[in-house]
Amino acid sequence: MNNLEIGKDGEGQWLTGSLSKRPVFIPGVRVCPTSDLAPETYPDVRSFRQRFGLLVPATNTTMEHELWSLIFANPEPDRLAGVGLHTTPVLTPRPDVSSAAGVEQYRLQFLGGVEAAVKAALLAAPQYLIMGMSLEHIVSGIAPIRQTMAQIERYSALSWATWHDAVQAALQCYGAKRIGLVTPFEKIGNESAARMFRELGFDVVDSFGFACGNTQHIAHIPDWAKDNAVMGMVAKSPHLDAIVQCGTNMSMIGVSQRIEPMIGIPIIGINQACFWYALRESGFNSPLRGGGRLLTEF
Image 1: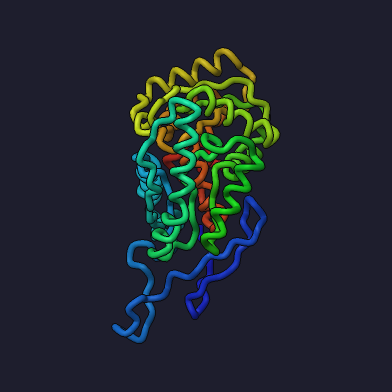
Image 2: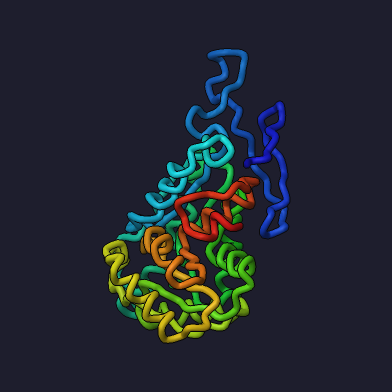
């Protein structure tokens, strides 16, 4: 349940993130932008508890859908009633990631568009931001990834949920060390993802990449192919602690819910993990249905 207490002036309050243990400021929502209509202040009619800003590449057709599916699956007052998303695309007009040169071009496009996207997102007055991008695909190494996010975070005073923070927290909840990676990336992106997890302290036992040459193609990977990738990895490496899925345009919620009971280990999908992190850091602590084990158990 959200334990926020909005101040009488509507300015919000500071929390200590339950996962990061860092200070998190949540601006208030009980401010009516047209206060001349009445002396009272009113909350956002739909997002009266919290507005999350979601930044995704403009080619991404998956992440927003998956996060809304979690909201709609948990409509109760003690779960996600009154939680809303405001999604802003980051312009990426040439999404060819089939080569090192293409990935570099994509990196420049994405990072070049983030500042403008943040400015656009802030117009809706979100209270917390979610980076809807596997930065390890375009930035190699956890230190450069953190440096990149530090630069992005200067564009706003709000707190952010990032994949590298979310997945580290999720795997630590399970005490997981030996992991298998499933990604939509080509060889270079897969190696960069494995590097990030190794530098975070995890043993990448196996990895599988679908080698999508275009970021739009990622959303078209069929669920049966993801099932096969996960089941094949577990059969080849039976002592894994968890399966981790990268790539926000790659839907994994349905696969996680179907396959987790069969394999006996958690599947940490990027979309549900980032939203889980954002929610928990913001004070929403109830178990949530529809997103697999992580949202139910922690």
